[in-house]
Length: 250
Image (cartoon, rainbow, N blue to C red):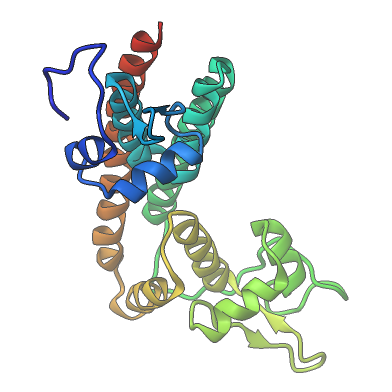
């Protein structure tokens, strides 16, 4: 954005677009969406913008990397209609979400330190199935799904994707998850919460099982940690741009 704009200067849509690497249609779309204040009009009906619009656009674009397009747009709409408290609440929710993601990452790292992927223990898990303990240790699908806070259908999907490999109870045919399966399911759940798709999780868990070590997860966790740090820094940048816009609005 140009740094020598004066408060009374008029900007054409193309001026605003070029300064931010956008198309003029994108600028018009942002105005129509309430992300920018309403533009002025010339006597011939052409839109005109001001340095305030430029600051609004800068604020929005700075908010997107940390908060996502939807939340950033909602924040700007709230500010533009004078509902600053609503905008701050939306920002607080994003920060709370980031904090929860950091805690999830920490939980994954803590869990990994306690895992022994070279063994597949069959000690009882402390859970029971639909008709009592499944025998020989383990748990049925319903109790495990409840413990993980997911649906049974999700566990069946993870089985098809190779994330878990429960045995079948010979009497009932029910799936039985031993402690290693529970461990794999927990890892899958945590990595899914971290934004990893099944096709990336399956080979990681497979390598943990076969390699007798957790090294395959180190790169994934480092990437996850880097993405969280980048998002946190983006939130700081977005806050500075938004504060500049708020000050300009008065």
